[in-house]
Image (cartoon, rainbow over all chains, first blue to last red; front, side, top):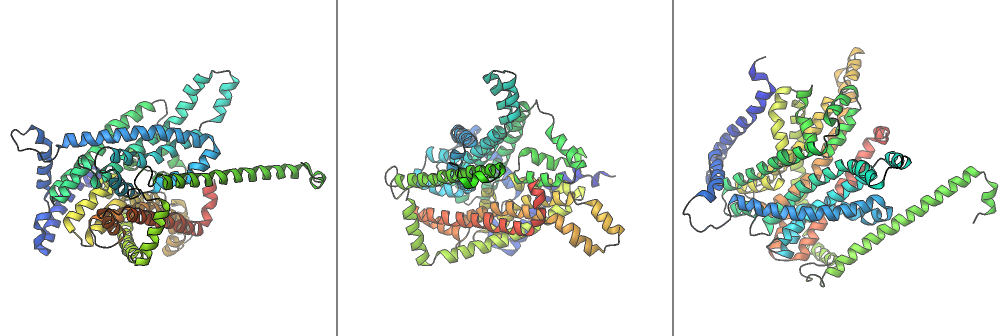
Length: 309
Length: 278
């Protein structure tokens, strides 16, 4: 087998193909609409725009800045994200625990949680930007509203999935209440709690950016809108690339490491799944259910399949 | 209190009666709390309007209903829905096609490697990014929204089709071949029924993202549709119209997603309900 036929080569070929397609596409569109020249950025212009953003704070003697540099921008957004996220976690955990423990509380909140869960972030963004205008309140509220249903749903499922037998056994052997909580309840809740954190964070981030686009005067989303309004396509594409890079870094270096630390007591879940799938045709049903909720683990299973086979 | 009629029956029926009574009691309590939830939340909303926040900033549910009536009388609702739904069906139809093709050819390991990163980017990058980029490049032309919808949703279809094709029942296909079933027969009786649920899952989850992206793309790059109406209302600071459009489309999309598609699913996948129950 030559190098050219390996999947790895194909994977590396993809970005090359995208860039080639990019140049070709720009050439074609320019031929069809000659007036579109200004709005079609070439790859080198996009990279130039990104580099300009990155070195912006280190350039001496420039004019008074009209907007913040990329570091400050993302710091502002991250601050809003963290505050909103913490509030969503606290309130969501309380409501989720209530819903898991009591059927009345569950019936009380259920429909409303589902409605908020299905509401697009755009809806909140338009509404919030009119009510709160510029500042921190609106974006933080957007993070809470988009993130909280995921916390509630996951915590509720976590409470419902705690192993009753282990509690009974602990009581039978006279284990103290706080030790039961520490060794049974918390580990059983942990995967759900972790999923809650992850979803609330990534969905909250999307809600935050959209709200900043519509009602903000600083922050990452607003800067993207700034480039859009200025009709600078290379800036829009470059800033969009920052978003993707930011999300990937967060996923790779924060959540994956933390998840490995928190779940080091568990056997390798991914390996077990693969074994099951190899021996069980009905495993396909599970795979389908898994695709309903794409977590990073599922994504990695999906992408690393050939490595395991 | 036990009536004489029940005393005559066996103890087993009494137990059943008791269980039934308990279930009924639980159902009543559940519905009571559910209705309480609606009353409390709608009441809070109506109360907050004009008291916690100005009425222009937070119109209550009653005002939203009145606005809906006004908009309906204007005749702006149906054309807006028509424009949005056309865009949604064309865009998501193309996306479904692209996703299915990519999923099928990804059975080849080379193409799998090639499209791996494309699928991941489609699944993770927020729709807003594609909407803004295509809006800058294509302006109000139809291509922008369609490309944005395709790029945000094809990944979900792809992973489902990919899983479906990968788990095709090889033994059934082999058996069909051994008994000389024609290829068309195998495709129709084995391959399609196996792939259908996967395609359907892709359809349902893809749709739930597609309608949100469609509205978002209309806000930036279109002069018709629900997103465009929302944009106008927001620019004119008519919060009641903003809320009405949002809720209107929200409920309509939920209706399509939860009622229509699920009814469809139940009807066509009746034969696999045993599996789901297990």
